[in-house]
Length: 421
Image (cartoon, rainbow, N blue to C red; front, side, top):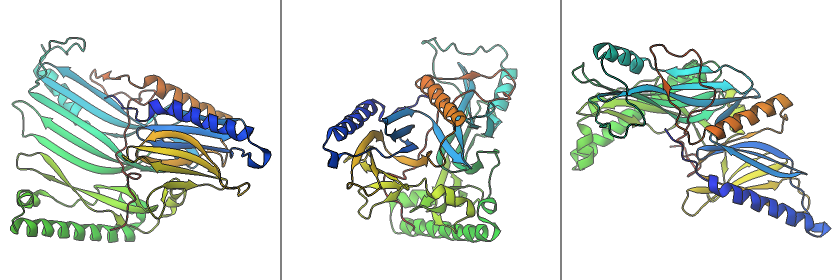
């Protein structure tokens, strides 16, 4: 799957603008001169991460289609690898979720569903004469009767914990009943451990949150029924599937409301034709766990009128101003030293939404960490736009690919401020 690089074309212009602004400031009279604050951070927005460094030597900005998170001072890269096989009458595609500490050689498998590859092996045994499609063959009819695929969608990341959804579709020609299902998960990027509510919040708060979620689901279902009985056509159609939705306390994710932790539940169900459906319950604010302290500083803070969002550090501030269309953000850097009045330097114009800011100047990156981060950016940039597809030959790989094949976030954190229900 290809990645769309939002904001990439305007990055060079924005960076040039920042350099021009810096030069102008240096040429101004002494009382007006402003020195760029010393800062270094990673800024995730759109489907890229921006590595920004500023100081006495000027400002540098790099961009790459890479997703990073920081845990206990270590940077982890998160990526999704694709696998599968294509035949004239069958299509198999699966996704695996990986994480890698930037200074480590090996990757950790965070999540994989064996269904697709298991069905691929079984299908090959039943159709030994079938040959895989040549990707360069443009005459192949794209209408397979058997389609087995799963997909992973990254929703959000908060320090060590990644929230994602997994969707599975199994349609085997002449085979058993079709399978269409989906669930939400939270996984620890350090170990690949799937986390439960109790692991993240403690037993007491987990029970409280699950109880509130069940009540929220009951209220939502009652509202749909009331609307349907009152003549609402859409609600009347939805009523036909309500009995298929069953609350699952393990199908949840982590989000944030005004920089505080919250939990969102995905309630799986099925349509009349077996199609996978889901009810997404409103976020539920939770007691602040110990691990949230380091996460909070990476999250944005909205102004009172929702016109700007910012991250405050001890010596500088990063602000993001949405464009009138809401599809881009203009980043600016300002000093918080209080000397010589407020001054702003343009950093870049990036694709919306934005997700997090990871500060790197306190403590500063050591030489090994900086070299590892540079290598990760180099590799990710080199692979951008390339379709990477590993062929499955009957055994699951023991190691991950060396770099990210694709990643995407679907959070709308910086499209609008999120308020507690």
